Image (cartoon, rainbow, N blue to C red; front, top):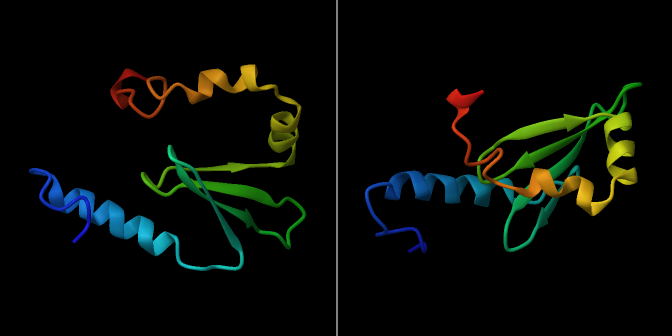
Length: 101
């Protein structure tokens, strides 16, 4: 029995998300899982054999993905934590109503 069972009307949705995360956590030599108490993400190099490889980052909870190229990754390397703080505010992205865009 998972910790999601018996929690209310969206039990099946919660269980499906949990199963999705479990499946995504299966060992894959080309994929690295990074997690803490707030997030679980998978990181994969996409098209590693091409002249323009990208880093694929996937939020395993929501399946939201982003691909970053070398310039975007270099910009992150130069960024300071204060530069990233707007990205860490979930009300700007994760909890925002998509119809507001």
